[in-house]
Image 1 (cartoon, rainbow, N blue to C red):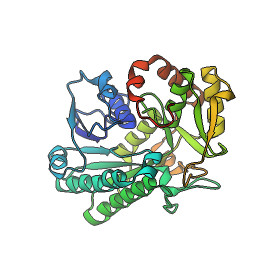
Image 2: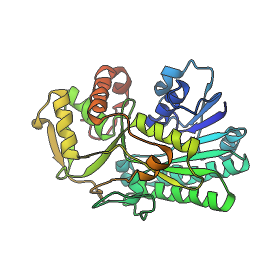
Image 3: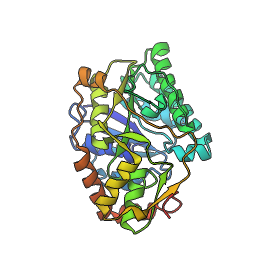
Image 4: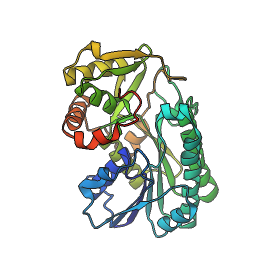
Amino acid sequence: MRRVLVTGGAGFIGSNFVRMALTGALPGLEPDELVVLDKLTYAGNRANLAPVSDDDRLRLVIGDVCDPELVARETAGTDLVVHFAAESHVDRSIAGSADFVTTNVVGTQVLLQAAVAARVERVVHVSTDEVYGSVGEGAAAEDHPLLPNSPYAASKASSDLLARAFHRTHGLSVSTTRCSNNYGPYQFPEKVIPLFVTNLIEGRTVPLYGDGLHVRDWLHVDDHCRGIALVANGGRDGEVYNIGGGTELSNRDLTDRLLAATGRDSSAVRRVTDRLGHDRRYCVDITRISDELGYRPQVGFDDGLAATVDWYRTRRDWWEPLRTGVSGAA
């Protein structure tokens, strides 16, 4: 059908997208060739692509999205680019933001410039609900002001504005997606669900920030990838599409569910000082993608969480080598 380039395709969400695309789980997106461009940093992992590594359509290119020559070479002849490549952990961005600005802002600029030069037919830029900042009431629609509060969120907001500018200035066919908190298998164990699950099944404690009442909307990674495919196939040029899961939980409620799923009790929870600039609540309005493209979350949170816990319980071979140096894993 077409050549697809997936940046960051060995990371959590990107690799899930690749596996789904190559196994026919994303209708309307069946590539003849799929190129993964990934730097294979700490969160990029060849093992994430193992289930499809024998597919002749897959080619892994190890390299940096900030490398103009490499990116120009890999975008040439490409029909669709799906841009996942990003530094994404808020705590790491607080400790040091330089890598976030470089990868998320400069890397996006390099990719968009190459897409213009190569006359790429379609680009989907994958972003986050964190660009809206804390949403006290209701849900943030796509025209909500961008009010990022962490260096990570600020770098993603900057990349979103670059995508808009390349559409308006160069006519590039690019759409941006903004997702809520993802969960599922193959997620690097510094993020809250895999960190808590792996700690709990090993008999360790888990760190709960502040009062634990920060609220997030949870989205299974499969639903996120289905939403991205809908935008790739039918989204309007220059538009933003929110992708949410429809399950709002406080961090305390989420922790209670994970304790129950792993047979642990509240003695496993240790309270830690709240994160700097910690947003109280995220929530996105998914009316646009639902009305225009027919998006509906398909994975119920209870079922999705149970399957995710089971995956980490049975895949110690995947996550145990990754835990060295992970904050909160003690």
